[in-house]
Length: 185
Image 1 (cartoon, rainbow, N blue to C red):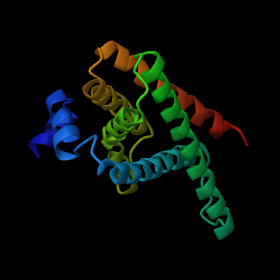
Image 2 (cartoon, rainbow, N blue to C red):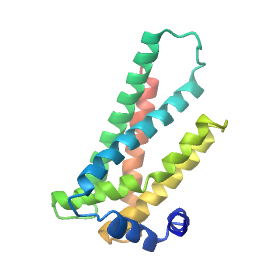
Image 3 (cartoon, rainbow, N blue to C red):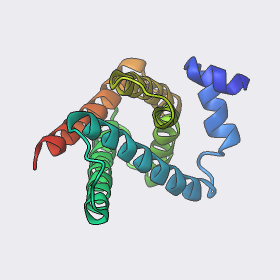
Image 4 (cartoon, rainbow, N blue to C red):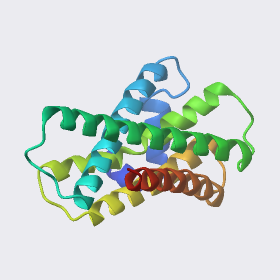
């Protein structure tokens, strides 16, 4: 419980402990963990997009099964494309802004750290139970951005300003992609 509180408070020691001691980042175990966290990350993003779309358009409760399946596949596709853009911008930023040497295992560590630090997205699940304003999504995304900065800083050991720039660039690209997808028919 103390580690969770320290993670919420963005303590670098807690992130270092979680990533290097608990998850054994850099070991062969993290490949399976990475795939599981990527899948969970995409599903949570799809839920966030679904909530955003339902706020934009009045939902029709008498939809057919086919239209529901099409809507779900569209939302999952939007989430997948947004996460591909996010990952590409993050890794390009790490490569060219932080001038990180190319080593595939180090990039996998960075990706795992950033995805694990997106644990605040789990708070979106409370929107299934309680009614929240759509501004709660913005607050959760802000917490995700700030925890991504801390995790990137722990893994790369670069200055905070550089990590803020890389994470902000990746989140902005993802956000703009999702907004573009939301407004195209």
